[in-house]
Length: 216
Image (cartoon, rainbow, N blue to C red; front, side):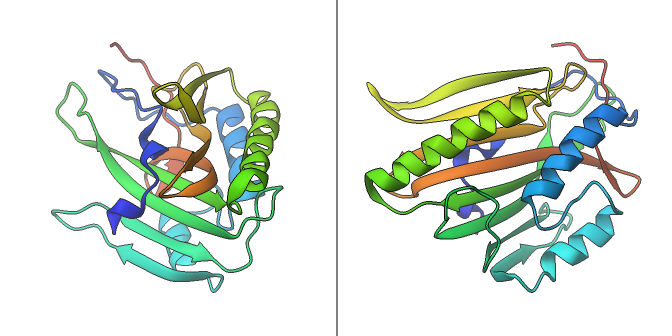
């Protein structure tokens, strides 16, 4: 089940020496929440996290869903395909949603931390036309979303000398991880894809972005 996650969803993680439980700043929540509202069918930032999970897993537009609930030995994972949700400018042949909980490095107190990764993947048609669609989409997203963050960092996906895609992480100055990543990629397994990935933590049953004092 977990092999269905697009590999670059973990891009942009930073292992901090200490994470703070301070609440997110209004600007962080407003900008990240707007992205969730504009592109995702269910927004994790405007409701209790437990309510978000119910609405996400019970969404009638989600088909072929698979849910792995959190236990003592496993972390939360859900994925599925949307019937009619088209968050991208190009006409995606299918849109996959993934929500995956990931454990990150423990802080100096030894308390384990977890991060939720919330991803939409749009699959374009095969061939050069589909490739042009996802690259154009990626450039549009880069320009639009770049205005909402303090900085961004791109890096190419390569196979030898061939460029197969690009990943761009977006950061706020006071966060220890990138709350947003976008990417385009072409390969023989996944085809032509464009992805949007949000990251957040959960505290007191609410999704939040921790304002952090940290050391590398």
